Image 1: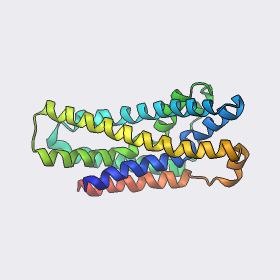
Image 2: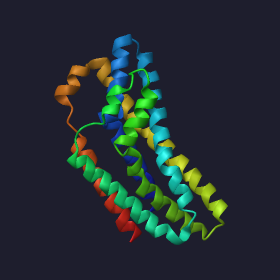
Image 3: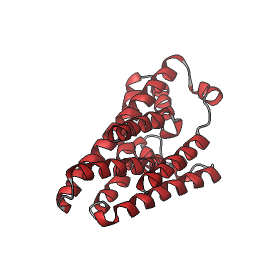
Length: 214
């Protein structure tokens, strides 16, 4: 079960990396404008740092909440319902937040943080993360609250690092291919719209979180 959850972290990173909404087209654009491949790498690093911070902002509060073992199931159910609500909202509202368009292109880390937060990328990891913490608690028994918090923080960091690393590698490979052999015009005609698939994936992950808690 735990192994399957860690694979879910990996595949969610791959999914986020493939999704252009997480920013890799901006890295391609920067490289094309500067005519340097180093601009692609620098942009991807900035996007990764913003995405990583967005994951931690979502996961770390649940780390503290999970120290209250008596409410562990309720926390997992509530988190799952929150993810479902986010997915349903994105299904109804297809417009991208206007604030993203107002961020200067040079502030890629800030843009990535806002984009990941606005699209619920961090929320998608919450049911998976809570499941890993649950398995960890069951394995080591009822630990002291401080020990439990410390363990869950390390899990949160590991989830965020693995997810962001896979996302950056996946998005980076696509960005490099587009920069090297295609152009941004290729994206508008050849890349499918993933907004609906993204929203549905949130609903599915949230439903999985509720089901596993029950």
